[in-house]
Amino acid sequence: GPGEVTVRQSAAGLNFIDTYHRTGLYPVKFPFTPGQEGAGAVQEVGEGVTHLKPGDKVAYLGSGTYTTHFTGPADRMILLPDEILPQDAAAVLLKGLTAWALLFEIRPLQAGEIILVWAPVGGVGSLLVPWAASLGARVIAVTSTEAKAEKAKALGASDVIVGYEGVAAKVKELTGGRGVDVAYDSVGKISAQESLSSLRPRGWFVTYGNASGPVDPIPPGRLTQGGSLIMTRPSLFNFIPDADSLARGAGLLFSALKSGTIHADIGQRFPLSEAAKAHEAIESGTTTGATVLVP
Image 1: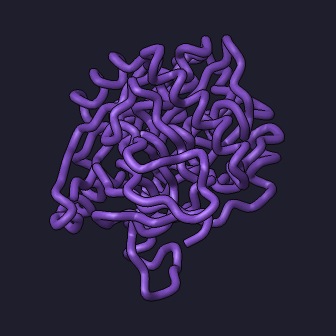
Image 2 (image 1 turned 30 degrees about the vertical axis):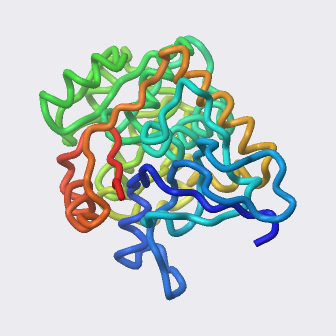
């Protein structure tokens, strides 16, 4: 239609939000096709589209990307630099923009600050850790296995806590009793209280995922007890409401990719026909980096 383009997909990215849509944690309207990001080559352009042409490589956010072809608004399509492959873009766009929003928009990170990152080798974490380290932050990571701990250190974490028990006590030990400036928590239910207890007075609890289930209700008084803490539950789409903000975030993301600050780490590729297996893998905690579905 007018203002739209159709893309032949190279890959669709897999994200935890896809599992929330499938399980009903985030209700959706039916009929519904999963998928929030993809990339490929423009096949057709609609009336009024002048900045894209057939053959252009693009990446995009949109609902329903578990498909061979995707049609959506041209102003939400991002033209890819020559250096970035469509599969890599599909792997990192939503996750990379999430990392960008966490570091630059929601609460701009400053050099010298200490942060706590849960799930440091997952889709968002594997981008968040090196990007934060490049900005001069000290990154303390929390993960589940020694193998993932080694990967987190390779990504730029200065310290890694293995296991989810007693995290706050270990954080206080690593920081000389001070605590961290920000906790970036994508785990949710089992990690929230440890995150809150890891913060310094007036620290930020950024809860942005529910890998272990939704966070239990937190009374405002808990924030007072921690030292006037600040809590936020952001959604990326509130930070990219228009084409200009999307282009700004994508520009920083692509610059970080091209400079080698972050990398498109595709840890798993599944055929699109095996999307169910891909969901099982990400929910089991066995994946590392990004996962893509290939039509």
